[in-house]
Length: 279
Image (cartoon, rainbow, N blue to C red; front, side):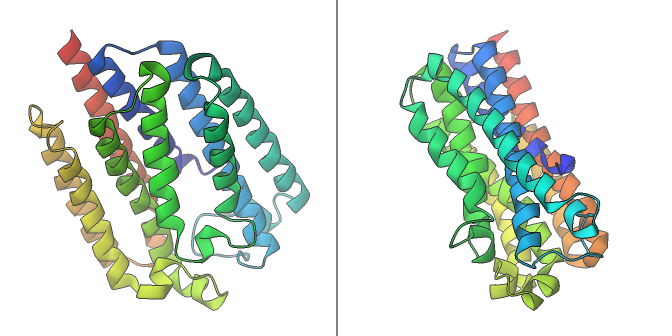
């Protein structure tokens, strides 16, 4: 399930909820269902990544990153494949319940999200293997969850929410950057063309830095009255960036969780601020 990465999907929902709170459109039940849907969609994508990467010879035993159950023989490929579609099916059922609040047009969004969860690792052109993984994260962990969470409760889209969604996507992309930075040599050896393989570690390290700074800049108007959130994020982000610059291999594994939690805490802090403003 890759639990240390799940805060990324929840952070996007929390950011959308924060704007619902600010606008007076918050509804607790659809918000909760959005969070469950986001978590299940991410878990199914993680399962698919493990299954298809093993099937196609990209994951091997003894990898530098966190242990992969299928590659190490802990889980059979068949069990992982079945789990992938079981969890994806559960996500779809939860998504269908959101039609009550968001309308039948959510079916289109649901199909796109389910397809994206699989297309990241599967299909004729897996996004993660062609330098498009970060773009996929920006879309499916930022733009989609933030805007749809807000829309399902408010029935509208706004520019401020969209800017926040891009900001969350950039923060989420940093998690993948850490993963691909760490695995660059292994990925290159098996023909997996991530951004780190295509452009090198220096490029993606700089991108990690810029993503965080750009994310805060996109939300500068929303954070105008609570600059402590922005300052706190930037300070911790710079510390994590320096950690990325000075470590390699398995030593970078803790940075996955730290990058994920920084994004989560940023969204949580903004949500708390929104609740305080309303009170």
